[in-house]
Length: 485
Image (cartoon, rainbow, N blue to C red; front, top):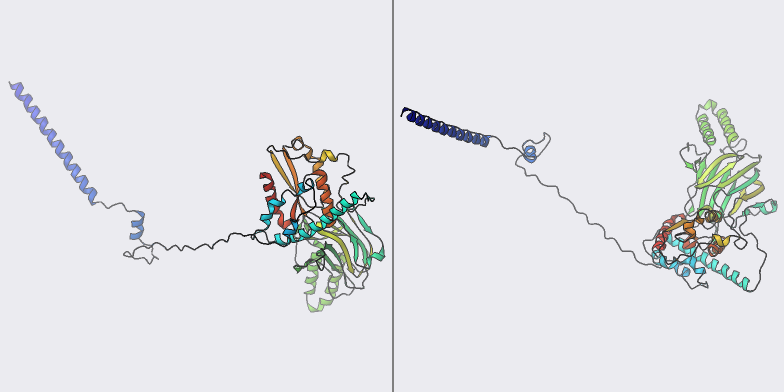
């Protein structure tokens, strides 16, 4: 009996402890919740910076933050290009007496007409088309004469219309100023050599490379004007070389002087300085001597002038041999074996357009000759001409089209490609097509030689504009058009 009452008492005691434990837990939860309510809320970045403004801020607490106004500018309406009437374009597309086989060299002309007629075409497109129309008309005339001569069996002994070199040793021919004629222009590494003696009758003399002239132009453009003020005894003005260009549209360009009293070591053309460093240094030393005290001015000035004259390549009464050669980027003049000046090509005045050399002023000219001129192949006498002819493009899909930019008188370089990698099996089988994209030339003889080359090898595509470097992007478009055609 006692044991039962003890057990019951323990049970009641455990029950009481459990109730107390539950009550304690409830009190703890209530206290913790109430403490959380009294703690400050976590602030957002916006609330923090709003409640703690910067010291230099003028924004007050009660001020509302206004979002900045974004001004939406209306873009100017883009005018859609329209088709315009370009002078000479209709003449390029006029009916012509050309066979279907011959017209394969003009496959891209119909595809490019709308492109050339756009109002947003390249700035030089209009002039390129206008000059191309004249060149094309002259070329068609020469082609017609050639066909007529063949039909009448009037075959004359062929002359080399584009010789490798030309020379002039006859002093009688120098009086007119024009000393050399270059029928097919210049290419890279072509050179013109002039041998003479400054005679002192004038203070200066000039050498000019003239370009091709159409019948409607008043004067031919001057591709390079090379004016020399020679070194003389007791001269008041220092000797100087001036280089420039001239065109009918723009007149004289910006002249380049050598020496220019300023170091031009940073200016390079084909890696060569635009002015010989010795000439620049001599000029700077002379200026320093002249700027000394007045008591020594006359003595030092004469010494400076003598020093400059000693380094200047053209001296009155002294013979010289001057060689002007065409590089990749410009013309370079070498006098008596020493490089003197360089002149970068200017737009639309490339070496291929040079047609003659003119000399004027106080110069006793002894001799003049040019070498390394562009020479076309005699296609009729070539034994392997059929092996070099491009295979016709078949109906099947090409693996690749290789477009090669070239100029009209680069005959030798095109032949080098035909005899080298254009003989690979992939090219000869017709899987890869190689085509030269060439604009018309202002030189009638070059155009005719190029036309004969196109008919002989079938890998030339004429462009309906003159081959100016500024229009080279039109050749890129022509390649894309041919690739998808």
